[in-house]
Image 1 (cartoon, helix red, strand yellow):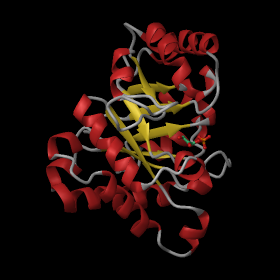
Image 2: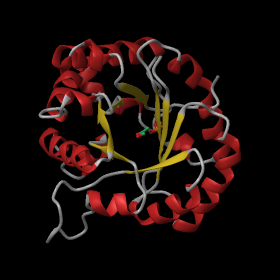
Image 3: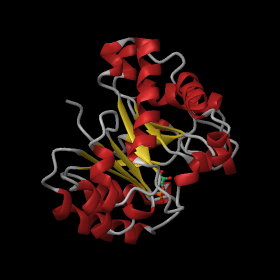
Image 4: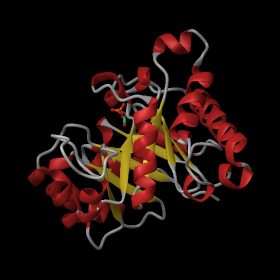
Amino acid sequence: MRKKVIAGNWKMNKTPSETKALIEELIPLVKNTDDTVIVCPTAACLAAATETANGTNIKVGAQNMFYEESGAFTGEISADMLLDLGVEYVILGHSERRQYFAETDETVNLKVLKAFEKGLLPIICVGESLEQREQGITNDLVRMQTKIALKGVSSENAKKAIIAYEPIWAIGTGKTATTEQAQEVCKAIRDCVCEIYGKDVADVITIQYGGSVKAANSKELFEAGDIDGGLVGGASLKAADFEGIVNYK
Ligand code: 13P
């Protein structure tokens, strides 16, 4: 049985003091789950997040990372910096980074490789636009994004990867993919992982769904066979909303 992984992507929201307050509010609300709970605040709030979550079952993830070791890369953040802060996960290739910050499948791959080299666990985002869905190329596209992101990743590391299927048309729109749509694509991703690595990796890799996940739809989504939890945007910004998703059972 794969454990569910429920992560909150706070995007560009919350100050350090608001981060501390939200995590403090969450701690008692999510402490009884057996699933993995992750919060991903912006870089400026990671120190506040790891300090507040220390000793609890809440893990901390970053929203991005650069693939170089160190040096003249103004504004970027390295894997070592994240590790030093106590960060364990890193979201890579979110569609907003692909769309607004020129992230490509190739840079996502370099970042995934660096994350594993350093011991950070990547949450790799894939997903299609509405136009691509209407063209009928969703599965081809997410398979390609998955293959490129995992290029050069060992089987042992691939087992620890998290892939988040996030249809762009469902992000922040209130328009959730149906459980059938989400399950179909998550299964296509798992089949793709199986083709690359074999069944032992495909059976354990975590595949999340993201896109307007809320308490009202999380149970049905997370109970689908190939959906191992969610990457949650808007509904992760309030303790009561996120708690309803984490405690979906
Ligand atoms: P929403 O849950 O706000 O649709 O955002 C999803 C997302 O992009 C998580 O990474």
